[in-house]
Length: 181
Ligand code: MN
Image (cartoon, rainbow, N blue to C red; front, side, top):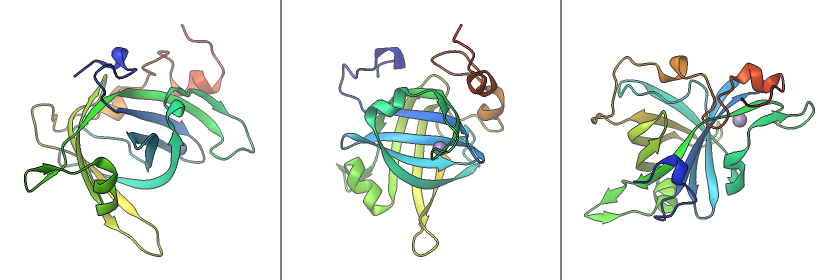
């Protein structure tokens, strides 16, 4: 697997990004590249490295691929107004298999379950996204760490990792318009 610095995907790996977003309520936007767009979920508590932690993930609209680079402030009056940080990014590998065959990510998402390996700077290892609710109240999914060598029970990566992977800024520094570095 290539490191995040190598993206531009020389080996053809799709990208992922996790953007910390201080909108009406603070959340983490988890986005996976699939079919030329970023499939997106809002994760109120952010990802966990602990397989026992199930993190609620609410689907949001697809975003264009180049949004993965966006860090800054969405102005007042616009949808999602508030500061956005590139909290983590990297590439991922699809791990969704059934009967010995890989299920493409787009189909896996339609079926409501996708497994993948993340190669980020902060978040690494296997994860699964599983839909547990559909219907009038809207879809709801769970983002859960797999119990593998990268699992870290009890480790709160959201609490300890508070800076952007592209600029080193905190969400407060981004909101205040401080320049990187
Ligand atoms: Mn958001």
